[in-house]
Length: 596
Image 1 (spheres, rainbow, N blue to C red):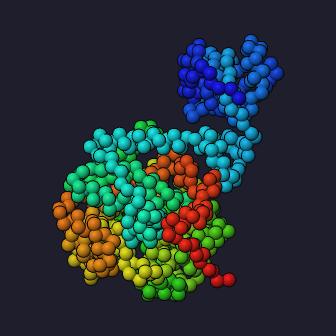
Image 2: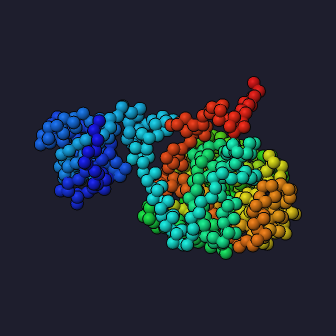
Image 3: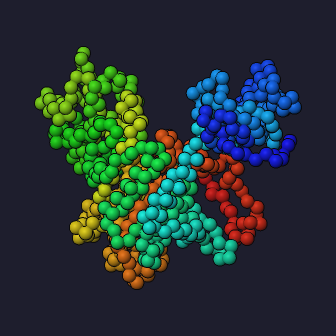
């Protein structure tokens, strides 16, 4: 292999256009593809900005031509020459009008045959791609998100800096606190038997910063949660975290609408309309069955409980008598697409989300077929069709359950399944929405108690304070989520700054005074010295990049993501460690025995 010698890169491949023809330059990168046409060699050179064609012909120095004839995919080279217009232009790549006639070539590194082709459009197992992630990231479709991610981060920093925010780093080794997902624990060597936690978010620290007089804080920060993975979840992820003093929820929302508008304009060239639409949590659930509704299409939920309250169909009647509801989606004009076979698939979707089944009525020009209408009187059928706005060509999808949460979850999932199946979603739309007025409490069957839907430091609405002890389920929080195309882009709240109110909320959540002090004592102490009203929010940075680039998974926008078992295929972590390391940490490993 050779060295660069006196050659130094002067231009990046992907930036060159016809206007640059005639310039002498030096480029560097990896060979994406090489073609020997007998007397003429074409080599596609790839760097971080794109691809440029190199050309060697019978006028090329013989030694350079011979060297070029040995080029193979992924060889790393540096090449000098003159940029010229191509005879056969192409619009398949941005540099398709030009090529570099090479006069000097140095091969800096060879390469073995790769386990898969380093190009877009390949069909290769995800596990293999992630094992060789350094090759996967060379492909333009995987390289671009990492570059765009960097651009977004810069815009975020510029915006907050202009708005007088201070970027402050908070600790990575913190105190483990309850009321969240499982912590990642880090043992302390110098204090045997004691553990740090990796932060699930900087929540307590950013509130402390407001009490420290910084007024406006932000950071782009790594966070950690030990939870099961899915397409938009990773054990380590990145937040855009911010907090402001002397604000209301309107101030926080306006500030972050401005951020989103700026990011979309500067990175995508898309003008996002502000202010964003706002919708209370109760309305979002009633209309869409979700607290993060995708509003790019209709298929809204309809409550037909009153129509079917005295129905002869036992499934409906028992659900209503138990305090639940009967709701439906009218898939208007979709009877042709939603055949009986397709409806059977939707039954499985409904059951996945807790429903005991899915009732349906399918109205075609030939007939009306239904899984339940034979149990209804003619008056009930007529009233149902009228309430649902049913017409020929429609399909009614009905779910009933004693728990409204189950009805919402099942129908919310069904409307997405139908929209995806029938092509109702415009992928080019960016529909933003604020969901507001979340419940402060949610009841955990597993824990047998009320828990905070967001976190214990969220301010309840003043008009609901008198219900904290008597009717906790009706207490609303000054909390808000920014939703984009059915995904939670970010969320936050106004925080409690009154120690008496904070004590009251912790008691309502089942914290004894001793446990509250053990978990949050440093914050409670800080409140005694004056706390400004404050609030903020955090964006899922990985999710923001994913949605902006219309990717299906946040793994596509993270350089080295984890897979379903929380492992990282390239390096092989997590891995066992030497006994010596465990002894230094005063840790003994005892495998948990499982029953056969």
